[in-house]
Length: 202
Image (cartoon, rainbow, N blue to C red; front, side):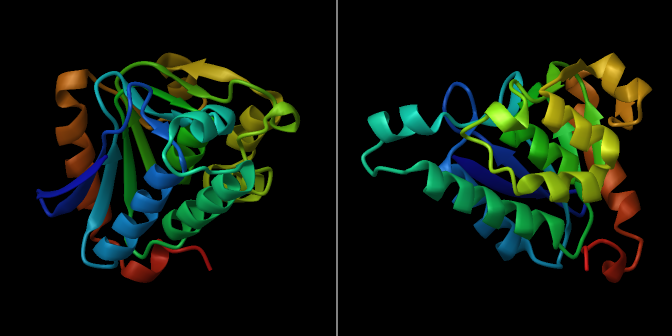
């Protein structure tokens, strides 16, 4: 579900879940625990699996398929906890967007200090007012981390290509799939030279 390795002085979190790489309750809990475990020891790179960074979970499908039943309330609570851990992480976080980053996946990407992207789209599949699986309380965190453009994408339910995201500054740089992770690790190493206190939101 989730692997952590140390490369180039950065802790690299590989999210490897189901075919969709959905951020469901177990995945979100694992992500929060991983950020806790890493703590202030390393800058962090977060990346996905195959051609997907991460997408939001369908809470209805999750209740039907899992051994343990998770409600929408459980999903929203897990989202809030993972967001809190990411927003207050004491070291820089770089999102290496290897593919689609949608809904909760977009929220996670928006919370990163830097986003690099190789392919796919990012944004929200539905306006926030119509989304059952995305906690509306995350909007403030997204706006605070990535600015009003990212906040507006969630509100309106828009998706952007790599080129569009780069053109408005939501993605720092596009790169190739083969170079993405190495570039993200180098970027995290550069950012890690900034004092710890600069990275965690107060």
